[in-house]
Length: 144
Image (tube, rainbow, N blue to C red; front, side, top):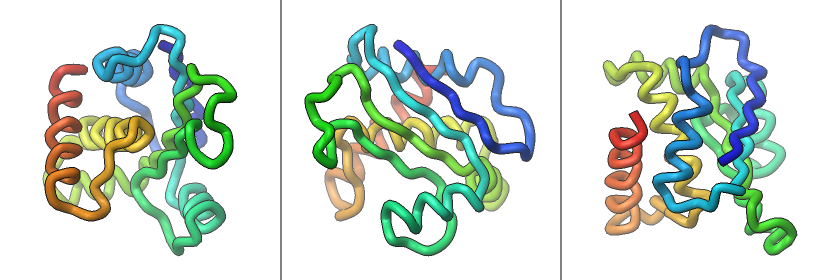
């Protein structure tokens, strides 16, 4: 598994072993050893720009995923899974608001993004949302 980390966030330290843990999540989801994921850890300003440019939404969000298999790029290189972009600022704020461990919440958001790339959805609620939440928590625990 290959996890390419782009850390433009300057607000603090990332959890130790983050890249290895993300690679473990990919392994647990059955991705081939050649699988590659791009992980961007940024701040609110950067994710707000990405959110506006690619999704037409205003302001920062916690995580955005771009699957390589969407948007006309499918089949180019099946080992390239896509990109997960996480705002560490939003993750830290959410963790503080809900009394969560900041490192675990950051990892939860990364897993959430990976699951979107793998086809999981929650936007409509119901059973798909429940399954995605269960899978997120399962992978969070299993990758620790």
